[in-house]
Length: 191
Image (cartoon, rainbow, N blue to C red):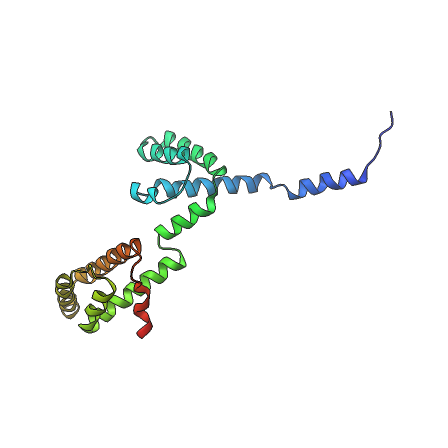
């Protein structure tokens, strides 16, 4: 019996071994997928509905949300991690980032709404800017909130009205982006 040595196959085998992920790397990736699944489990039903995923993954996440036993929850999270291996995680991560306000676009939107609120508090004309950008805005409510927010600032009280203005602006912006007729992005151009 003669043993034939083929250097080209040895090199190919060595290259294959070098490019395969290590056991530690596989474990890190598995934990990362479980962590991503854990973030999905922490979302509300409405937030989950906005994320594209397989029916089996969605069902597994709903089940994990219902489970109260620690051991059963851990096993369910491992199952979600296995399902995540077959999922395209980039769009899921991007949707999670957007929900959590991490994406650059979401941050820019938050800053734009904060500037709009600041302009509204600085002068009454800011409410007119809001009315032009968001025709559905309740101007009487915004004027009252403006007065309350200014009074809160003056008296050093908790900023309830200040926060409520932002919530209203965000809701108006959500409604406007659902029906793209006017573009509220143009509000900052005249600064």
